[in-house]
Image (cartoon, rainbow, N blue to C red; front, side, top):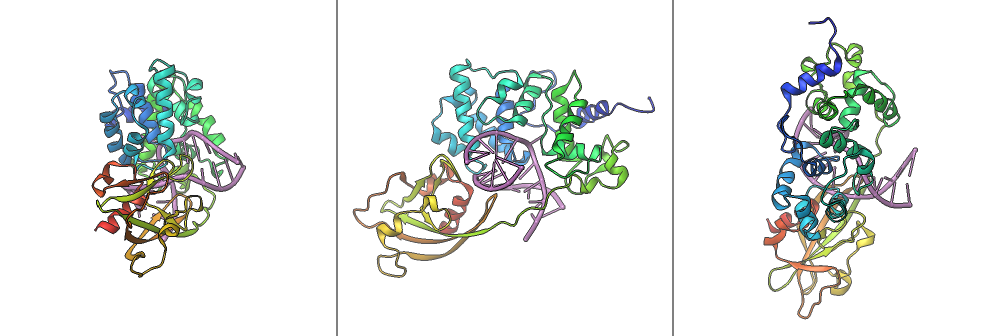
Amino acid sequence: MPATVDPVSALLDWYDENARSLPWRAPRTIAPDPYHVWLSEIMLQQTTVTTVKPYFEKFLTLFPTVEALAAAQDDAVMAAWAGLGYYSRARNLLKCARLIANTHAGRFPDTEAELLGLPGIGPYTAAAIAAIAFNRQAAPVDGNIERVLARLYALETPLPEVKVQVKAKNEALVPQDRPGDFAQAMMDLGATLCTPKRPNCLLCPWQGICAARKKGLAETLPKRAPKKPKPHRTGTIYWLENAKGEVLLHRRPDKGLLGGMLCFPSNGWDAANDSPLPTLLGNRQASQNGWTQLEAEVVHVFTHFRLTLNVQARTAPKGFRKPADHIWLHPRAFDTAALPSVMMKVAKAVLF
DNA sequence: AAGCCGGGGAT
DNA sequence: ATCCCAGGCTT
């Protein structure tokens, strides 16, 4: 053994011996399926491996090929994505699948530049697909790689400014023969050993050369700007049932919060989607034909605000006509519909 | 450049 | 209760 080992070789050796078995990772001897790589990378945007796994497998069952996905109904895709969050990803996923199927003969482009032009594919995902699916000389940088390299080189500039240095360091390390494995090894290292808190430096292939470890800075890098506190919003859910036991749901517009998803009519927390129901039916509480305030209160945390919802319920009067963009849906169908997690919480609070 | 956009696992 | 995640789009 030489006294000094090439850092990239040490990383790839660690990766070969410790690679987690992930459903979208092809065996060494089999070429990866670009559809699988693309689907997994979109799902993994700001989302952990544990969360993505069951969704990835469900999508491959429902939509085995990019052509099958392209042929699916919008609502079927939104329903399959329900609970995964960042719903613009699902809309762009479908947009991209139809583009690939209809104008690219079902084949994903194999260069970083072409991939970057597709809906839902930004700088990270374009580089990741180019490297992993096509073994191109591309160097994706995600949150894991930022952390690993900020520590390896003890980069003390706070995010996001440090991204420029990280990008340069990363590109300098990419090996010519295994760019895809290098990217995945870096991300695996960040996800399993070089974690944000309490990194397991004793098992790290770079424990001997990590500058942050030598300085005792491993746990504190990368530095981040302090975050702003989340504002708090409150709202009211209107749970309206018809004679068949179906509940009224509102399909939200495609753009914006929970775009394209089904939500119970509500007021007070999202002005653009305030419901006409209380005006249509009268919002007096505890009157014979009015709403009944339920005990249920639902708390949910979004990216940029915290939400507390109270629930009012009643049955629809005879002759009630549902407003535009509303549907009746029986609770037994909630599990397979496009209900976001916050609305699933509301349903559970009312039904149980 | 900054804000918007979900949800859940880990600590 | 807080952090942060295999980020992209919009303004």
